[in-house]
Length: 446
Figure 1: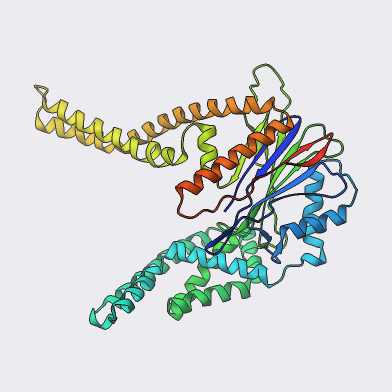
Figure 2: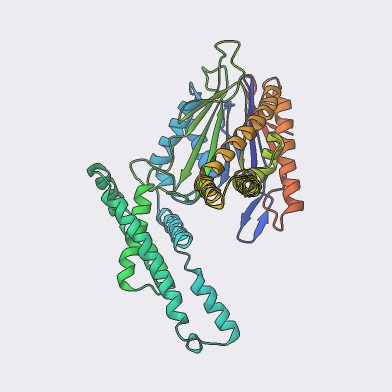
């Protein structure tokens, strides 16, 4: 895991990152996650999540170094041009030709998908308990069959859902699904065999699990690595030779699922918006699905719960687990209880009428909970938006050095609080910050 932050205003960009990398159960504080190109280019790269280019498992530091060698001293006109050129380099460089690693990552993601949806660990857990106690399933008649039957039922249920969705595909979608399935036939068969052999799935249901993962892979083929798959979050930011305001483009790069699309998604472009009138307060606007504009940006990546808590003034866990789930139910149940008590004390309302009123109210309780949840959500978003706007306004006026200092401080706080509050430290090490300006290019801040 890692923690990173990008700050951007009309004059500069600051990138900040920790240096922790987790391998298995160990965390090392030695990873480099911010890079640039040779030739005094005003461009920076920052990576999080997967530390390698997955199609061939080459470290990003080496990939970006190879790209830098190819670019040399050539300065491209826009950041979008750098991104386009980088994508082309990934897909065409003979040194980065996809190999068996691409299939391996996809297999791993498919197995994770089956485990998450079918939850076969129940049988494994019982096996471990039985082994540790020195007992056999035969001592508990029907237990082994019960566990296996539960897994079979989950396979059947999920397969039925998949068949319904497959039947809804139009001809173009059917062709695309067939193309992806054919391209990854060996990968799909290998992953399916691994799962079915581990959990002793019958031949009949092996066909079903194969159909499940085939649909899953094809249905999310436009997503790097597939839905829920492993990927690298890659930031490419800075100035093109003809740009006077910085641009930050976010890419997700995963294993190649669709060979026609490659390893990268379309990306999201963040750019500084020129105000059209005095009513423009600089808040985030979304012209389309791949563009975001604002007067300034504060963008955290990877592990960022502490940073978001500071910037928003409220923790996401509180919003998700209490404000949006428990509080609406608590209020609705309290209103129902109070209404029942009040009705029972009013003269002239008999039991039959009370029962009808309460039934009508109970029938609309879900609607009441939704309305309460929506109202709470509006309030939270208003508060959070105003507080975030305060920081964005401050960020808008900062120098490059101030941006770097602020970014470095926030990432340091994420690392420190994680260290003291979590049993396993996955964020930490040296906090590295860099600035990118039109005048001075990319500079590491000491």
